[in-house]
Image (cartoon, rainbow, N blue to C red; front, side, top):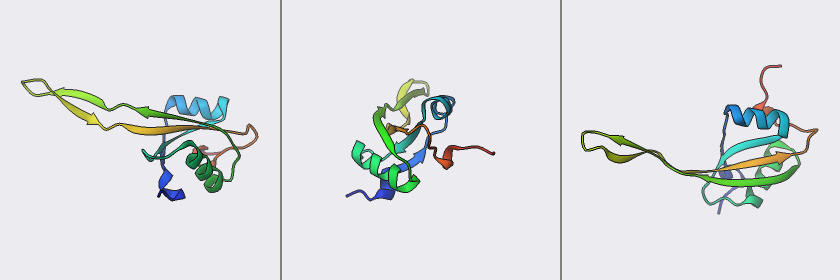
Length: 100
């Protein structure tokens, strides 16, 4: 059984996620592989005190690479699950805000 603090692993900060923060009011988190949309919604609402409108989940595939003389395939990064959380337009999560 996942607790509230086990569901969200870390925020994901990229150029695309920053655009989503500013324009679309969406925030991106890496989540536990067995987390569901309702668990993510409950965790974000209770931890950050915001109203969640929608949650989208994605499983990002592992990145593969080739090494050595035989050019065998190795796994560089494991697969992970991420959630894109949309909140109300008049709210924000302070974790993602920069220096004011």
